[in-house]
Amino acid sequence: MKIGEQTLVFEKKPKILNTASIVGPKESEGPLSIFFDHKIEDELFGEDSFEKAESKFTQSAIDALLTKAPLDKYMVDCIFAGDLLNQCIATGYAMRDSNIPLFGLYGACSTFVEALILSSSFVNAGYYKRCIATASSHFGSSERQFRLPLQQGTQRTPTQQWTVTGAGAALVTHNNDRYKSPVVTHATVGKIVDMGIKDVANMGAAMAPAAFDTILTHLEDTKRKPDYYDLIVTGDLGKMGSEILVELLQAKGINISVNHNDCGMLIYDLESQDMHSGGSGCACCATVFSGYIYDLLKSKKIKNVLLVATGALMSPVSLGQGESIPSIAHAVAIENEV
Amino acid sequence: MSYTKLDMTKEEYSEYVKEKEKTSPLAKHCLVAFLVGGLICSIGQFIFDILEKKCGFSFKNASTYTTISLIFIGALLTALRIYCKIGDKAGAGSIIPITGFSNSIVSSAIEHKTEGVVMGIGANMFKVAGPVVVYGICSSMIIGFIYWLIKLF
Image (cartoon, rainbow over all chains, first blue to last red; front, top):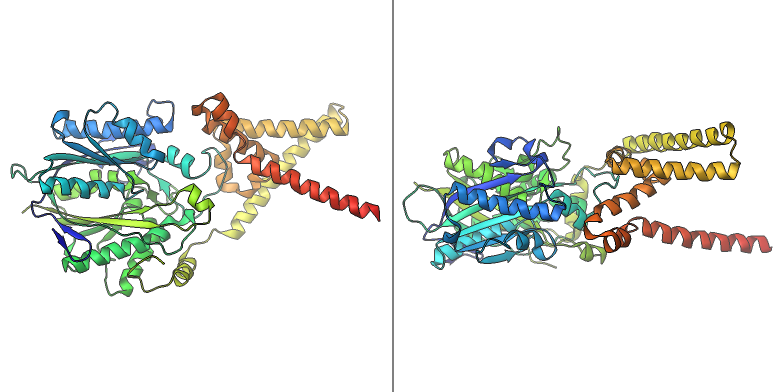
């Protein structure tokens, strides 16, 4: 059911029965290391290209999820998945041998939440019983697609972010009351917001207004106060974008400075790992949610969370033509069943 | 103008971001670039002096061999994944000298190795260096033309 302007209510409360995460070397050195299921030391993951490695990350995340659930492959009705590469090749090739129906998604770094929302919607509507939401990104393949060659000796700016290598997957199932698990209660689907930022080295600033818009709309639609949530976590705004988001909401009289955090800031130690503004990429939100935040919910350290993933929907071509960065943010409210 | 609940125009927002933005430490970057750039040039001079004075090469040959040596060092350090680490600290200091030119070609070649020798390496190795070559030649043509004009009078 839709309430307010953009928010969906899932009356049947689809469950997130389990999650799995797999990360690359930099993320394994980060502060969340112990929460990830698999840590891969080799950024090529035994493959001969970054693109193939990224596919293997997605595949491994799904395999890990099925093992953890535990669930047989044929019991999964559909996968909602996406990545950052042209034509979503990481996803396409990862699913080649899966024999499971697939919806390929592109929402840049907001893909994981987009997948979660769609999985929950299909499950809530009763079309599917079990869906997997997953997203991946890889530092090597993203740098190649969006920036310069990896070995090119250029200097990174203070606002620049680092694409997370890895994949996260979540199993969304119908609520059969058998296991207590976190449930998806609301989703706010974002609109494109473009405040004219053209600097790709400052994606946080480009995406912060989109996150602002979605969070504000979510709170208005649900008539909730920001302190209703134990944690409001954004996908990959980074340090710079998070500061902007908190200030923009403050100006509207909404204080999220206490319970806000950002996956891009959580996944790395910004100072010691020299990460400038923090992490980014589809896998940023996907791995931090699947690894860390899901664990917080499961272990009852928090009772609910508003996960807001932001995406910058530009390409090197559009930037070359002088366009600014259109951004989007999707929010999903997840809470522990009482 | 895209829809948003933000009470700011694009101009106001970009002003606001500019104010918040932590800018790169310009003085520090300039100093490091100056030192590293100078060091690379000194190494070049060192190679040149040895070739000319100790090995007995002519001025012209010595400078050609110096250039070739520096290009080789740049390529080698790129392949060993060291050049990008120098570049992250030195910025323009390691981009401007000829070693940086070599780095841009070799890094592109390594990056596109996966798509094959012809359409991967061959078609992409000048992706970054190409514009430098094109506009370098164009500007030297223009300068040459101006020089020729001045010489006429």
